[in-house]
Length: 187
Image (cartoon, rainbow, N blue to C red; front, top):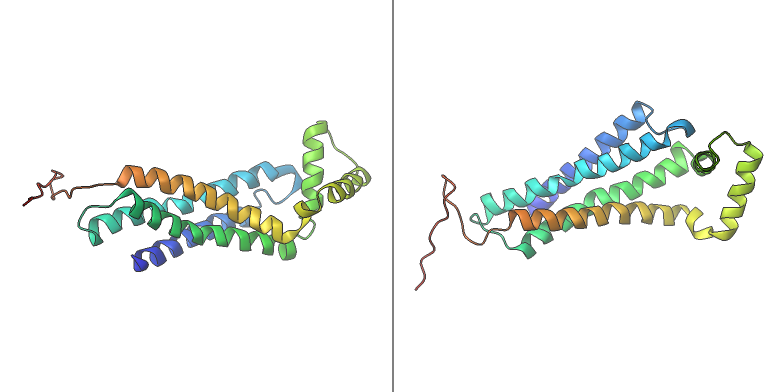
């Protein structure tokens, strides 16, 4: 089971990195005018990466567990794999906010203010709002708390997908090559 978890964990990690890098490379969601695109890239990277859970559970069930798997075992495989992209997203968030785009919070505050106002806002207004928000919600502006939020977001989606895939792939009796359920002899 460990080999499958590591293999598909790194596959999910790689898929997420690929989608995030492609979004960044093409400039999707990297400026105030296109933060909505960034949200789409972010959630797409999560879903694509977490689909590795399905293939991991199926491979474990069919190739390593005699064609059977309980809900609990399938869920365990899924949730352990979900840790990989969850950690990656938290780390990516940290590098993005600290290194790639240190002005992200200013830009994002400007974006949300403009969305609410329906028109452009001045930088003085943005900075005043940012100062107000920092005073009211200091934890929200802590980079490590942001990293944790990104980790937990991916992990919760992974939890949901692990549950769905565990239900879908659970099998109590093995099947033969034609797909027919094999009879289990009882004595």
